[in-house]
Length: 247
Picture (tube, helix red, strand yellow):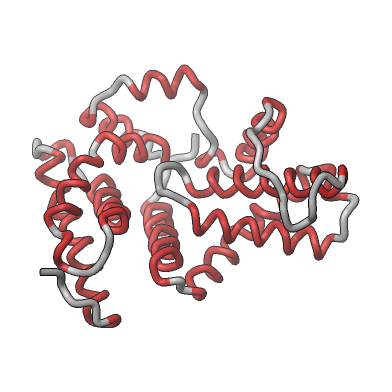
């Protein structure tokens, strides 16, 4: 598996920034950046669907990009964005085309459906063809990782930095994010869930910078990053949008 680099980490951090800006502030420039970065992914999905070959190329591409924008709006930061977007666009586009072919419903009312086994295999093949770094691990490897505590996961991550291991560290330590989000809830008119998403970015930064060799507790190291990210976000809100602090 291809190891991450500092450039990869910076790029993933920027992607999170774009997603937050689009979800919270409806920033169309951020959406445009995401579309430019992942256009290749959308086209790979279209190529993987035999149903798409029979349609008008421009219309199919427009539909796929529409579903990609929906994926950006609904992404919950609990998985790798590339895999989430790939799965979402694939199943929504296939559902729409299947409904159109069978004339079961109006073209605007496509249906969501659970991924069939063959669809899952196609998605996994697509991921491997795009980049080994974002493809899911084998079930046995994933199970072994889930048995590790935070320190064990950090050791694995520092030896072989992958998005999946990093996300497991995030899941293990979301309690730190929830606590800081609750403490700082009154600093601006942001909802708890929004502050959790911002704090999770700070947690990711802490994971990237943590040095096990120094013997520090990860929680003590991560909290200032989480708190700082939320406070910075609230300060920007107050400065640019005039959101007064609560209370």
